[in-house]
Every structure is written in C-alpha cells, then in structure tokens.
Amino acid sequence: MTSIPRPVAMLLIALVVLLALFPSCGGLVFPAKHAFLMQKLAGIMILAMMAMSLDLLVGVTGLVSLGHAAFFGLGGYALAILSPEYEAANIWIVLPAALAIVAAAALLVGFLSIRTSGIYFIMVTLAFGQMGYYLFNDSRAAGGSDGLSIMETPAIEIAGRTLLKLADSDSFYYLVLALFVGTYALLRMVLNSPFGQVVRAIGVNENRVRGLGFDPVRYKLAAFTLGCTLAGLAGFLAAAQYGFVNPTMLSWHHSGEALMMVILGGMGTLFGPAIGAFVFELARFGFESTTDHWQLLMGGLVVTIVLVLPRGLAGLLLDLARRGGKQP
Amino acid sequence: MSVWFILIQVLNGIQYGLLLFLVASGLTLIFGLMGIINLAHGSFYMLGAYLAYWLTGATGSFALAIVLAIPLAAVVGLVLEAGLLRTLYRRSHLDQVLLTYGLILIFNEGQRLLWGGDVHSVAIPELLTGSVRLTETLSYPVYRLWVSLVCLALAGAMYLVIQRTRFGMLIRAGACDRDMVAALGIDVKLLFAAVFAAGTVLAAVSGAIAAPLSSVGPGMGDTVLILCFVVVVIGGVGNIKGTFFGALLIGLADTFGKVLIPDLASFMVYAVMAAVLLWKPRGLFA
Image (cartoon, rainbow over all chains, first blue to last red; front, side):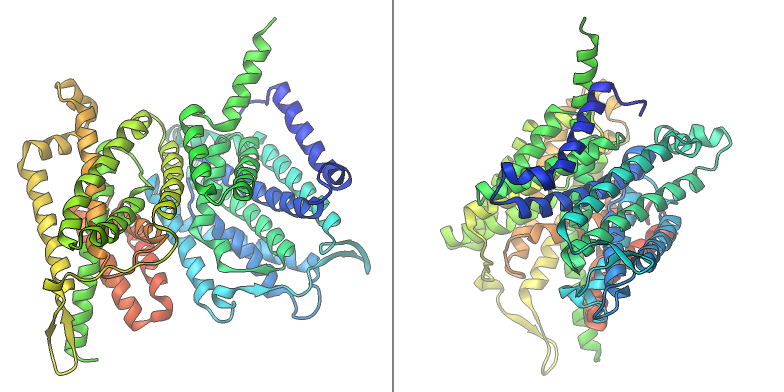
C-alpha cells in the first residue's frame, strides 16, 4: 500500500473523468439506454463504495467479514424507518442519525466478534449478519420480506432553499459520484495517517504490533466500525436511489458478492475493490443481457481470474505499470 | 403439548442434525486436511439430490439411483480436485473462497441446463413408506427413521475408518502436518484427491437420501452450505467429533425453533452460533 504508480493513477483519474462526463456525453454513445445506464452506473458506484469499505476490513486489517451487507442494509432501513410517511425527510437529520445507528451496531458487533479470528471471525460476522437479516425479514413493523418503500426521497436543503433533489437522476448521479470519490479519498487519508499505519501493520502481523506496545483490539474495532459505517452510507444511498428497502440488502449473498468484488479487484489496494465492483457488475449485466445462462459465464470468469491473476485485477495493473516503468 | 409430540420433534431434530453431520463432515475433513474452504460443498449436496431424482426416474429404483450416484459424485470430486483446487493449496484461503464461489455459479447454471428450474419430488421407496404409530393420532414415518439409521451407520463407519485404518491415520497425520507426512514418503496428492472425493460423495449421498424428505429444487445447496459452516464452526474446524455434536445441536435448535417460535426459527440457529463462539471463540471442542 505504498503510493500508486503514476500510470495506474492516471488510468483511475481517466475512469473517474469518464464517469463524470457520462450524464452529459453518455447519450451520444448509448442514445437508447442513457437513462437506464446512468441509474446502473450510480448503483455500481454505490456498490463500489461498499466494496472499498469492506477492503478496509478484509484487505487492510485482515478482518474477513461475511456480514458486511447487514450494515449496508441497516443504513437503508434507517432511512426508510426514519422518513416521515408522506413527506421528504430532512437529510441533515436522517443521514447523521442513520450513520449513528449503523456505527452503534457496528461497535457492538465488532466488540463481540473481534475476540475471534480467522474462519471463526468469518462465521461470527455471518451469524450477526443473518440475525440482522431475519430480524427485518420476520418483523412486521419493518415490512417483513416485502420491505418498506420510501414515498419521498429526501432533498438537500440549506436555509429553506433546495440545493439538490435526490429524486432527480442527474443530481443523484453527481452526488453519488462525489461521495464515491470522497469515500476513496477518506479511506486513503485514513490509511496514510498514523492510525492507518497501525491498522495496516495489524493486517501484516498482529503479534508484532502488540509487541510494539499497541493494543490491536482497539485499532481493529475502530477500523471495523469505520468500514461498516461507510457501508451504511452506501446502503443509505441505495435506499434513496430505488425508493425502497428489503431484507435481501442484508443477506449473506450480498455480503458474499461484496467480498468477491474485493478479492476479484485485489485486496488491500482500495482502488482494486472499486474496479472489482465495476467489473463484477458490468460483466453480470453484459452476460445477463446476452444469454439466459449468464451464471455459467460469470462463474467461468471468476474461476479464470483466480487461476490467472493471483492478486486480482489491481495486481495485474500494478504489474503492468511496474513492467512499463522498467522499459528504457 | 404431549410427551409424544415432543418425542417426535426430538426425533426430527436428531434426524436433521444427523443429515447435517453427514454433509458437514466432508466439509470439515477437507478443511482440516487440505486447508481448503470449499463453498461448492452445498452444490455437491444439490448434485446428489438431483442425481437421485434423475436416476430414480431413469432406473425406476431409488436404491439403484443411490448406488449409481456414488461413483458419479466421486468422479465430479476427482475432476474438480485435479483440475482446479490442486493449484490453490498454496494460495490464500480467500482465493479458494473466490474460486469455489465461481463453482457455485457454474453448478447452479449446470443444474438449470440439465434439469430446468422446476421443483421436483422423489417418491419414498415402497419398502420404507409406512409409519410407526405412537398414539391414536400421532405417528412417525419409517423413512425418517431409516435416514437417521443410515446417517448413524455412516458416522460409525467414518469413525472406524479415521481411527482404526491406515488411511484414517494418514488423514489425521496430514491434518497435523502435511509437509511432514509428505516427507515420510506418503503421496499427499493422492491422499488429498481421495479425501476430496470422499467428501464429495458424503455430501451427494446426504442430498440423495434427503431428496424424498424435501423437494429437489434450485438453490437447495445454499441453505445447506451455510448451515454446514455453522455446524463446522460450532464444533471446531477440522474436528469430526465436534462436528457431530454441533450438527445435533443445530438440528435440534432449528427443529424446536420452528415448532416453538416459528417467527424466529432461522434467527435461533445464528443466535446459537454467535453465543457458542462468544463463549468459546474456537468452537465447542477446540
């Protein structure tokens, strides 16, 4: 996790620029599907935020969580439950409240789970995630398996003036893009801070960190809570995008997919899992629209990437950049 | 709630637990010996159920279907081990997780291609159709008793093989230190292939004998996979004895959860697992 080589950084910036240009120029390339693709891309950016937040746990700190979707879903449910029935919620209240709820849940789950390690940690987080899933799935107050709908998506207002309506697809797209880039910047900043250095060291060798006089449990708990809260933010956005929430947002399938995006993209690199989210979702979308038997192609792609690219897509990019840099 | 009713639920819980043990034992053996986290294990269970459905239809005999399903499942296991998993023994657990996740997708699609998306049922073989009368109104199906007995017999056989045979000794030694076993001149590759195939067959046989009890349909492997991981982790990974008791605990918790608090039955299983792991972070029998 040293600095990103220049060619890779350039590529990432170019991709973000492309994303930023899509609402205005995408219509020229895909005239028939522009609106649909914008929604799709916004959805993928939200998943990429979730994947990056999971990378903080899995790739950096070494906490392989199979319950990450529970915090994603909790963020979404918080918006749905806190929204008044027939009017838009005040985002300055709902968003901090949702994040606080997710952070509190993450602190509790993290506090209990971090005592275990390895495959046991995976399973404890799975257990808590599934408990969350069934809690919402079986409770009538939260709409059961049908979920809840959000009648009015919140708008961003300052002093009575509406700045940004989340229901408007262009505004929503740019907001998600800004938060997507912001999440990356925030995580990168955290990792470069003294706190992040300890967390990264825990991922490499926990015993040595303890030997140096740090208490790994506290650092792991802080990283776990931060990662889960960011997943909650992503879930909040997903709920705002589709206007409804349902228990599948919390299911282990969803946690598993996020984990696959992280591994596929390249753990511990932050940008890798974001790329993983795009490749995973776009491949699925591409396969789904060409054949009925898309799972076969998707499974084949996943298996091939594991066999050919041991460090994921990010590993491939970093290797290419290094090789390119060595040439005269 | 009468005593008989509770007895029936206990029998159901034990039967379910024994079935879970049979599936989970393969998972824990493979993890213990080779260090492979195999997400596709639930797919082997599904494969067994579909083979039972298909072969019963083709041959007209459930018994013959099971006999034929065993070598087919073994071949699937051997091919996967030699073709894919063998390259991953030295890689991280997460690479194995990703690869076997890809396998789940392929198995699910293969199932849809071969047998379609419908839900099927398999008839209980005629010999085992009856039920044992307990009281005026309550009775217990013979087939469930038979399933329990088969599972118990296989569990006993597994115990004997692992504790009393040379092959079992190699498995136990390999789980402790596979490099040392290899250094002693044992062909570890062959051992791994054999254990992986055995795990595949165990899961497939479980799926096959469970087919008449539940419906055979898409996605049936996923539920079983997660419950098996729960069982394996509760018992302590790689520990067959722990897996046995973990499976009974989960079988009973699930059955009684469904009877007593239907709304929270699924919640119960995970609450039990969380409680066990918070109390003993490395499983009950670590």
